[in-house]
Amino acid sequence: MSEPPGKLEHILLQAISLYHAGRTRETGELCRNILESAPDEPNTLHLLDVVHLMNGDYASAAEYLTSAARVDSGNADILNTLATALRKLGDAEQAEQFYQRGIALDGDSAKSLVNLANLYRGAGNLKHAADHYREALEKDPDYYRAPNNLGLTLDGLGAQHVSARHGSQTGKFRTARQRGPAFGQARRMAGQPENSTSWCNRIRRTGVIRPD
Image 1 (cartoon, one colour):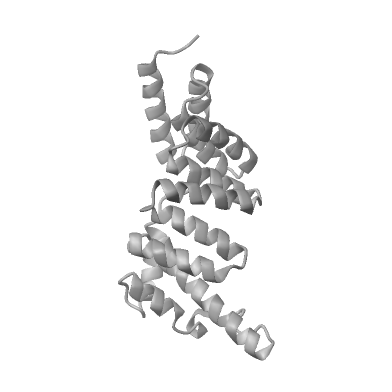
Image 2 (cartoon, helix red, strand yellow):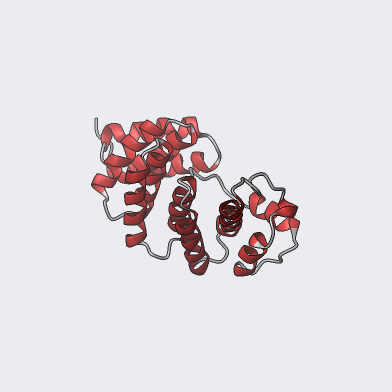
């Protein structure tokens, strides 16, 4: 029996509240209840996908998100999360395409740019990764993931340069103290003090639950 739209909206709000409270099992149950009456409801599909991502069920996440993207193809958040599910499944080519589609829809999204940069970094394409981290910082200097990831990427580029010159893996396992100016450069771009060890701890503490 189909539920009236107003009741479905109320159930979805309950599911969102449960999700923010960390009660993902109950969130998933409510989402599945909604989908019995409205199988193409994109916000519910998206939320259920995030629950699957958090639980490590990337195949189910991609399945639900593909349905959500089909219904609401102009939703950058859905495309971004679908790309993350595909990246977790190892489909880097498809993930890149969906990240880029999401960025085209919402060019001011630092999150999408950082996620695409993470994809490039994971594939060893550090130059592309650094370019996208920098662009994310320009869009949103306060986005907590960009400065640290940019610092690591710049450090990796420096290590590649040293390795190419000396034919070694010099710098691969360097400590934070030995990493050189990369972290300072990234922090300056974000308006953060170079020598503040508490800054990295602070951005870790302020992060919310994220599927990626």
